[in-house]
Image 1 (tube, rainbow, N blue to C red):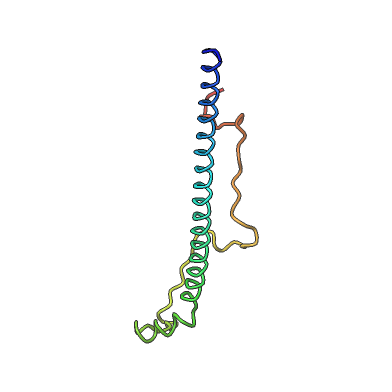
Image 2 (cartoon, helix red, strand yellow):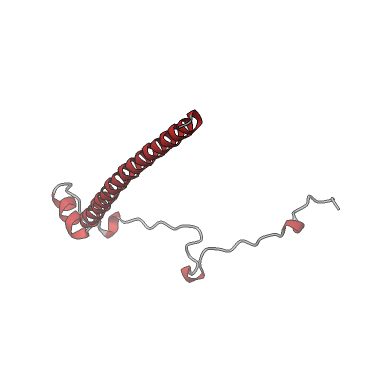
Length: 119
């Protein structure tokens, strides 16, 4: 066999071995990332469940049936009588709420306000 053939054969075997090693490295990285994604999904599911439970607990703690006895017994609070009630008037609150918020008239960009005496 010639030296040239042996050199080319050695280069081909080396390149094949390197390609196989790179393939294995990529495969192992792919498997590792798959496990990492699985752990992330488990963590996400756990967090969603925790959020759901906390939401239920928040709704339970906000119920009037639970707050009122606490306010009356522990905080010694009571419902104010008419002599302790103040009526606050808000400007614009006397209009009909079905109309929605008051509408402002918009000026088009071409109709910008000008100071008096300017053309």
